[in-house]
Image (cartoon, rainbow, N blue to C red):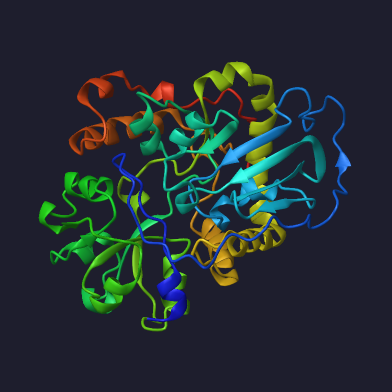
Length: 398
């Protein structure tokens, strides 16, 4: 196995309320805080205008991601101004909050998740540290946390999950879909049971095919190409073909969103009390986040450069290359991972019917897995998990 492949850990599913432990090969001790990359040269926002966050938002808007810096999180990182400072020990980057080329008058701090926070779920972090204004919280994670650490999604960023199952086409007779690849009874290797349980419920795989032993490395897939394995369409297909020399060929894959994995991936969420306390802030900040995702995909280079710098500075063993970042941006656009809400044509809008479907489909699965109790499940409603109150209905990708 190549050095880069040994060092790499891929995102693991944090489902069923269970954090999956992985071994991280640390690249070294934390480096000292870096000096600012540059001074802030952005012009100030018009006083009282839509991009002026002074007075309504905290002096520092703290945002929490659920994983390591990567291009799927580009909107958040794109708001960090040129005067950024990296705290390699605390694992954060901060600077002026720059939106659409102007200085909003407040600062932003972006914190990564995963090993940087001992794999704690974002809702737990948001309740441990009330300074976190916004966090990226998957719909199923929000359901699991709803009883004790409720969050409310205020806008989507990725519209559809990039989660896939992948396989070796040669070992599966040229299969082009998950049902075709799984038809022979091959193990479906994941790090959590929500996805395989969903596939079992739909009759796509048998319960006997569930294998929850995925630990985030390519060794098993390379040595046993008969399995199906979880991955992300924004990373693994490129990594396996271009960066894992022991594989170095295409993989077959299908998006799980095509088979009922309908969750909103990493929508931006707040604690319920934040809506009342910072409603004026969210009325400006949510449209900024809607537009930031669109702008990032149109011009990703500077933000990708920052993401790569952060990966290097944090030294957690996570490796992330320019090639993977560029591939992620391409896939987000080409496959419609980031797209307008089909129901309204508005980017970032959360579809009420889809939210109802998510609750109907995933609550029983999470009860079955023991992630939530039956009594807690009775209290969960789709309406409590999201709001479109702050969405700018004029923002779209068209």
